[in-house]
Length: 142
Image (tube, rainbow, N blue to C red):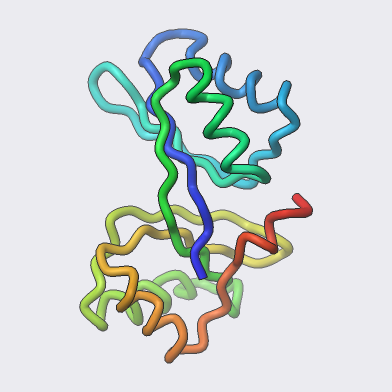
């Protein structure tokens, strides 16, 4: 029910992100979606890609700090205002906290990606509410 997300710690210096993007490109890894948040000294570049394990190994071999996390990617049933709010409401009203969230378009549908503070409860809500989620298999042909 979850997909793998790669979080890469990137120095806040010119060219650091480009170097990572070039490594991914040169190793045939397609990026489905990415987001970059910065802090003092470094940024966290989160991405969902075509081969998370391969990307992680490549980064580790280059001594670039990265982690793999399980996140949920929920396909919005309607591309209308408030569709993301409806998903978040169902998740949070069940008592599940959302650590972070971002969204993107995939296959003509809005997708909400989030990391939960309680995966068991999040999966229960997703199943009970019959939410349409993206799986690792959906990303294999990207």
